[in-house]
Image (cartoon, rainbow, N blue to C red; front, side, top):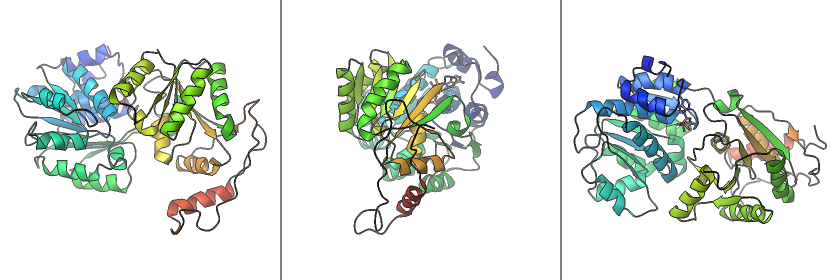
Length: 418
Ligand code: AMP
């Protein structure tokens, strides 16, 4: 293997783990973060999913944990927003830990499932815990683990921790940690709450700003296709067949629409399944497993359910419904074009959400040609700008409402294929 990783200060154990995963070169965030983490520094990293951020913190943390003698106390705590991410990050840590110079125990903990197996897993202690904040607090209340010897804290996808309403739980966890510790903060975006947390949490951090992989990486081709709302499913079928995508991840806005679209595709003879938050944990795991193993070719998911999906070689992501927030757009399209693979991210633009897409484009500095596919020409017309405040009745227009209105006024709906 290349010794590019060795120059970062990683030892033989980490290098075996890297070789087993066929990583040749460190990614940008790994190049910067690994030496800093090994040196015990705090890190403030702006890095997307797909940047290789998990290995950027997992490899050096495991190396450091293995240097300390085995004990029952928890050494490193990784907080993540969702159960899928908890499982995924824990799996990566376990994988790397297998090659460590001393056997390390990694436990994942997340809500929505019985707490008992997690309590059992923590018996006798753990070196590294990867957890969602709510379940972590439950486990502490049950005396299943203590935080008083944690020397490294990782906040992974910190922006999502706030988006998903974990601010209070996070604050409670922080008060239970030793004052002297290493803090690593990874986030795709830095809204005010995350920025404030970073300022408070981090001491003399190394700032890592991995260029926005979406804007600058040619590996992800972004496309916008204008289509009538009612014709989206036939267009989806058409694209899957004509572009011969071996695997497609489709985002819709609601649980109902995931089921509805999956159902229609299945009736057309395609292999599709839905993934949403109201499925049982077992059904979600099954849907993901089927998709990962190629038993199902099309996965129709909501944003929440799709968090943390990590499938190398995911060639196509389709925004059947546009994401609500501009940041979710990045999270979604970051599912494709991962670490060396190439991918396409297609957004369906309908007359009534064109203004919203214009905002997404503006936010990310994009100017995509709005394609029209032959046989799917647009007949719907754009709705007039909302009268009055354009927001919720009785509410003053928010900054976002005003931006949306302004975008709606500027937007010109394409009349013919460009
Ligand atoms: P992450 O951003 O941590 O979710 O990682 C995204 C994907 O990149 C995962 O599938 C990793 O296994 C893969 N990956 C991470 N580091 C490297 C590397 N240095 N070379 C190739 N693939 C990598």
